[in-house]
Image (cartoon, rainbow, N blue to C red; front, side, top):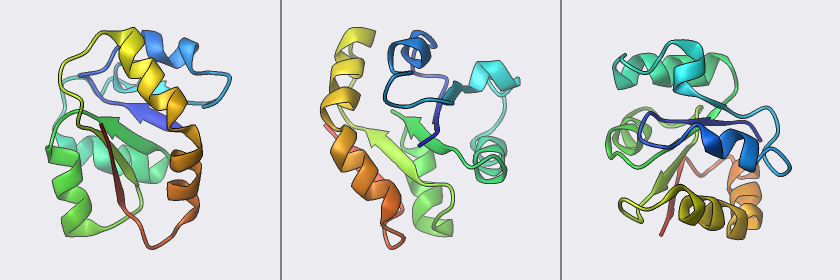
Length: 110
């Protein structure tokens, strides 16, 4: 499960979650920090990433286009990085099931 963290999430999460989400990355590592959501969408699709975001834009694209890529929408509001890490860690089994279910395009986590 490769996650691509959106600009609104800390790059620190990549190292903190490497044990459960290896090969994940951040948009900044691919010069995607200042591009539109459609460009990030295509990058994620072409490189087999699941987009993780707090914005509504990627989930809206998911509704329009379906997957790939899949989208994890963090609906927890603005929180410290350690809290985001806890949410993702505690949801790892749900995320695995989501990633393996071809009929699901977007997962909302609170």
